[in-house]
Length: 318
Image (cartoon, rainbow, N blue to C red):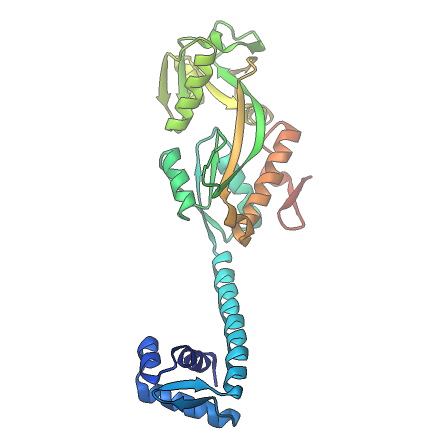
């Protein structure tokens, strides 16, 4: 006797009729009759009596029905847990990001400890990413703003808040200043990579609050070279700027901290509530929280070689 056969008998008890039960189970009536006969012979008990055209449970049948349902519920829970386990052991995470710097470095560090996990970046608008999250087509979203979901299907939490630096050429008229207001960049060319709609909106909002405007926005894969040749500026969060300094990447370029109180990069992690309970997304969420906590503490993007894994996804620096 197996779970499938027990379910046949439970269906027969619910329908009270051999023909209807066979139709519901999509099997032949002789096959259902044979299953009933085999089970009754195996357990040595009679489960049904025929009254008119209906089948009714005997006292032993009612006991079988109660215990059979309990067993089927346990089996269904078992299959559900095994299926969830299979999904939890996925080796692929789908993400969307719209913020300045850090995504590639973060994933590189994570994959140092979880080399079998791959990542797929979704290229779409932020509202499309939000819809994909709700319908399970994305695992997480990293954004510059808090995502307000009226249906409460999504959770959004702040990972990091930091100041912003403008990197300029040494020929920039205010290059000798250490701290400047955004208004001093009025009319200059902003170099950006990648040129995404949320980033453009973010930068424009900064200038609008300062009563200034961006002269032009150009996408480039080599912003430092562009600054050396053409002037203009790029905006980076403080952690990335400090990281560039430590790795001596700026060369002759100059970093100017934006002093306006609204010049803050706020990084938010958004995900479906159910993702928090899934092993793989949960592992990456835990890693992100630990990683950016260290970023805030160190004031830079920590080098992958300085990380030491501790208790799963908890991290410390050498």
